[in-house]
Structures are given as structure tokens and as C-alpha cells.
Image (cartoon, rainbow, N blue to C red):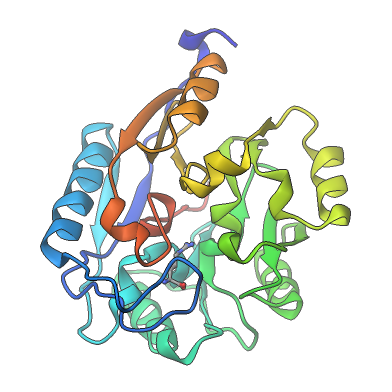
Length: 274
Ligand code: ARG
């Protein structure tokens, strides 16, 4: 597709400054509590991502970070917002449990009147990715199948369950990214054979990323339909995106990799009712 046919739509995101970011526990293979974390560098890198989104014309809301919740910087996990409706998160790991209420309170304090505190496990947009026609939902490591059904009932949109099989790609947003409408990119090897078949059937034109692209957090990307913000370590994937008419915006979030996340993890999209 020629470059000039891609159009960005201004969007609204929620982010959380990593003022209290550190790695004190390990709940995914990227986390190593014995490796030092430079919190100030994490803040600087996060500020550059924030600045890049604002510069691209987007609105970024902020939630106050809470001491003792170091993973709160990964705002994508805090909730899922579709049509102005907010499905809160329920975390699998005790270490992150308190983030669910912290995020839900932010929504209730900021004018979101339709909110649901979930009964079943779902880690927000980490595992629930919204395309034009579907909500794609990851399970296998964090969110549960019951959590998917709860999302489907609440949002009234078809939820497609996808099984993740590689612990490095424990959240769906580390293995798959929505680019525009029903255009996606993903790493086939992160999924079970049955889920790969589902993706091939629903998204025959998807961009297939390599395992190296995914291991560089290239799929933990944020697209506004034109600009795709992604880790600067994913340069080969950036080239593929350019061929498809997107404008890659390379971001260095190396310090946030230590918690197991990158661009997408740090942002939660606030989708209003159409
Ligand atoms: N340390 C966090 C965890 O393991 C990282 C979450 C990354 N967020 C994401 N949306 N993939 O839960």
C-alpha cells in the first residue's frame, strides 16, 4: 500500500510514570531481580515515548504511580477500554494484584461511568487486543478462558481466544500487534498450532514477524493507523512496516525490557464510544 494512504487518527492513552520502577520479583523470563535497574533512565526513556505520542497528536492521560507496585508502569495491563466501557483487570500474580483496584479507581475518578470489576483473570490490554471486528484474547500464561468470556459478555463483541505457548511471549501484546482496522502483525511461533490456524484464517494478509523481531519486543508496538511506535531494537520489522506503508517510530525502552515490556505495555488505549 502506498505510504500516503495511511492516516493516523488522534487517540487517547493512559500512561504511568515509572517513578517506582524496579525488578524485585520475577514473574516472566525477562525479569532478573539480581540485575540492577536504573530507575532514572527508565523515567527518561518513558518520557521520550510520552513525548513522541504527544508530538504525533495524541492525548496522554497520567495515573499516579504507587510505591511498591513497580510493574504499574505497564499501563496496558491496568484495564481494557472499548466503546467507553472499562473492564478492570484481575492479575494472576499476587505481586500485581493491587494494581487492579488502583487502575479501576482512576477510571471511576475520571468520568468513566460504565466500569466492571472482573470475577475472572484478565490482564487488560496485555491479553485483550481490539481490532475492528474482534477482540483477540491471549491465554496460557496470565488471562484465563473464563476471563475471555467475561470480556465478550461485557463488551458485546466477538472475542477470539488464542493460546500462547512460549513463556517469553506470556502476554498477547508481546506476540501480536494491531496495526489498523483488522490489519495485524504477529509471531506465529508464539501460538499453539490451533491458534496459528485461527490467525491464518481470520487474518490471511497479516505481517508475519520472526522470532527475533518478537524477542526484540518489536511486536509490543503501538499503532495509530499510520505511525507505529516500536522498540528501536526491532529494526528489521520496522523495515517491513515501511514496505506496508506505515511510518515506524523507533523508541529506546531498554530499561523497561528488564520488567518484560516495551512500548505497548506502557500504554493503555482509551477508546471512546463511537
Ligand atoms: N513485569 C510485568 C509482568 O510480568 C510486565 C508486564 C508487561 N506488560 C504487557 N502488557 N505485556 O506482568
